[in-house]
Length: 449
Ligand code: SF4
Image (cartoon, rainbow, N blue to C red):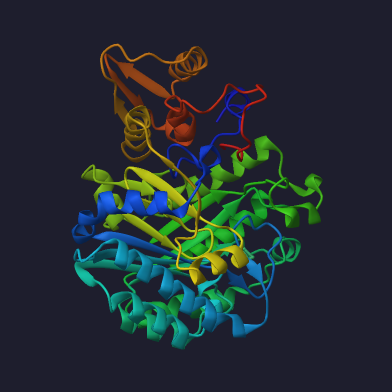
């Protein structure tokens, strides 16, 4: 990519795992509002819901981390946390008021789900399914830390129906790992990957990060070589999000350790080229997959969907988030649980939905949400006649067309192959909440590239 291009588009833009994006949600006045929204959607529970469960504990702090987590080596926290997750699930079961609940997707994220003992995870999953039925095409996945995902974790979760595991690799270079305080030898990743395959997981995914402190093209080349040799089915190649105003641990290293914006773009391009050369296809927004992966099939069949968990091959009518900071999407409203463990616990103990903030979508939000989903999942949008862009968005559109990133034919906007790298910018053309760069009301997001 030419230097002027990345300079021109070197802006802070949301990742659009939701629209409207989380910084624009507001505090719920009372949990009853959430219950009312749920009651309106209750009959959709039979059509196959997705469940995301947030397991926030980690034994060690990785300094680059921007997730909602709690660092502890005290494993006595496990059992009460699982008890409360099951109580929270039961609140939803009651709100669905006798409607059949069918689960078509379930994901354990964190934090570190494998911080929890296999027996605790078994208790959690069995408790969830005690009050729901499994969709025939149920997909179950979890995030595994290569350092503590044991053979027993993999075995127990596989027996419970988990068929996908995602390992956080980030970078395999020892110097980078030291600075980000995530020491994980390659042998641990190899062992966890081989164990998962032997036990019958049909998809092993890796998460990698570009733009980490001390990362160089040479170091990244070594990581890419080792990773590609292990042949993960999917790779998420995320840009490091430097948000020290939100994540205090990111202040533990000097910003001079970070690659410059130009170096960061070069690292992304290096990774992208390596994956494409190795037979992976670009799904969109930093995701690559081997041919025949369900994400690619969904992409080609125009069924690809995007939610808080990233890209998915199934669009479910409801996404229920359980656990501290988890996000739910009811189609008509979003809600996020409290980010404070103590408050989440208090609300569950009081028999209340622990929703802290959210938003009921307006008609305009829903129209724009569809455009943003079409752009991020299909790379194109069919605009209604007489659609009016705001002045700054019209300017961005003209710029993207002039730069060969978007093509406009009558009422259709289409990302070009180069433009795919700027999907976030193309989505922002429809974001009514995103103020122009340089204005004081602009919320702070990570860099788009
Ligand atoms: S990166 Fe993952 S393992 Fe590390 S602190 Fe954050 S949530 Fe925990």
